[in-house]
Length: 57
Image 1 (cartoon, rainbow, N blue to C red):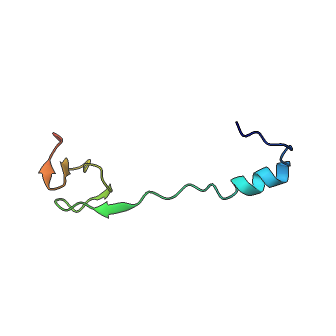
Image 2 (image 1 turned 30 degrees about the horizontal axis):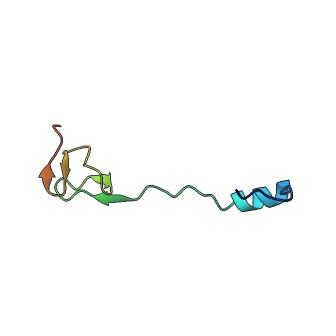
């Protein structure tokens, strides 16, 4: 099992973690109602996904 031989300094740890950024949510227009929605998720306003009705709204 890999174990670090030396303790990593606080500045090195923080420098590495500074690159962990949260990406903004990408929104696309729904094909049916043209409301903004997340990709690969059913539309919360009309309930369609991939041109099919999947949710009762």
